[in-house]
Image 1 (tube, rainbow, N blue to C red):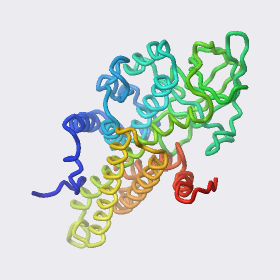
Image 2: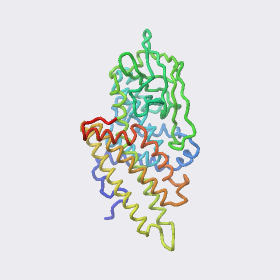
Image 3: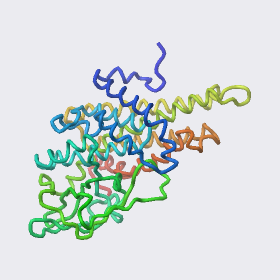
Length: 387
């Protein structure tokens, strides 16, 4: 039997029946609902909000959280496959689901009270309440401990002042999970969009993640009730724990982007005639695409093993760093090379490689730059912190 061109090691055979069903369902959603519109959305710098109810109906928001909160209760591998298939459509679509699920719903579930879980999670799973995650600051970047946003206790409330930057979903969010310095260390707060003094300003002129909303958040004496403080974590381990959840999904997402680029390059190279033969008949094109298949296969196996470790409760942050570093680098290199193989046609958004390549410039940077993840692995190997 011929091997599948995007699954040369038959990774699909290693999935459970439920995991395969999840992948097929999200792949169909991407093919039917995302791909027909995403090129225009990217051109127009428009996030397709109309897809949110459909994503919620499919159980893609907070997919790994318990069913009692309206979520799907899926395992980590299934969530990874969701991220892979969504990013095969566009990184912006996967980013929306990732932020909603891993950076907003997860901290409410892991660090919040039962009252907070019941208040927020069912509506978030249903797409009726959208969240954003406020950690990064203009001067902070890879150094989140250098946080300037602060929260001061004032009677029964907290008063937050400061600002956050590069916040996905910021201008479409109903709530923001905001991390702030307090007299008792860094703590998390659920800030509602109608709280006085809280504003979001969309960041324009982006050449990446154009089909995603990116914002700056500002807090000017924003009064937040004690009931909106996440009480079960203090310190950087709170936001970093959320980022580990999100980074896990990011290790899968770029695989989808790389597969999309390989698919387009394969089809184009078979149809494009140069010197009386298809481009696909040349050694240079075959060597390029064979190398992409090698790198995609490596990434698939890396993320699958990471997912199995996560489901077994054995996943370590260094393992996530290794996979994010490898898989983002794999995908961005393939996107660039696929754009080149398409020649002049490759610079237009009528073809996906340039769009995926531009998006991946953000994906390889956010939630830990490539250099940061390299240094995390280096620290694990040497026992010496080089940050």
